[in-house]
Image (cartoon, rainbow, N blue to C red; front, side, top):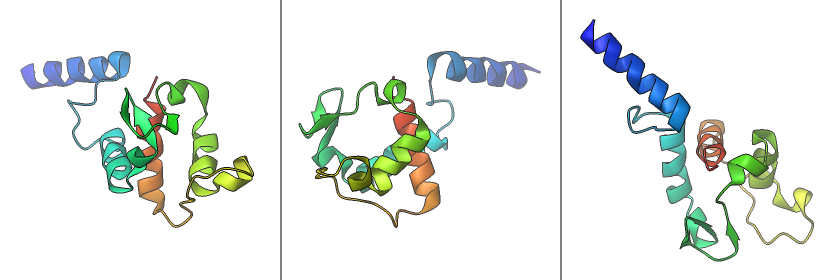
Length: 106
């Protein structure tokens, strides 16, 4: 019973506050790893850390997941003069996890 209560509290905190530390295998956590592995921070920044081209702070409030997916896989279709490298071959799970991470940036 006590473990169930702790799990319920952790779940509520995760939903209300976006806390993923209670769920280390969450899609958003894996997405953070994809962000690092793909070296997104060479061009993009989050909370002032990373490249200067485009800050991703608040991107989760600005773009819908399907729009993020298009930016990641086919940036030139989104903006003809985009200098972003396309990632059309990023495995679907990695792409979805990356989008889960970006969606949480609000």
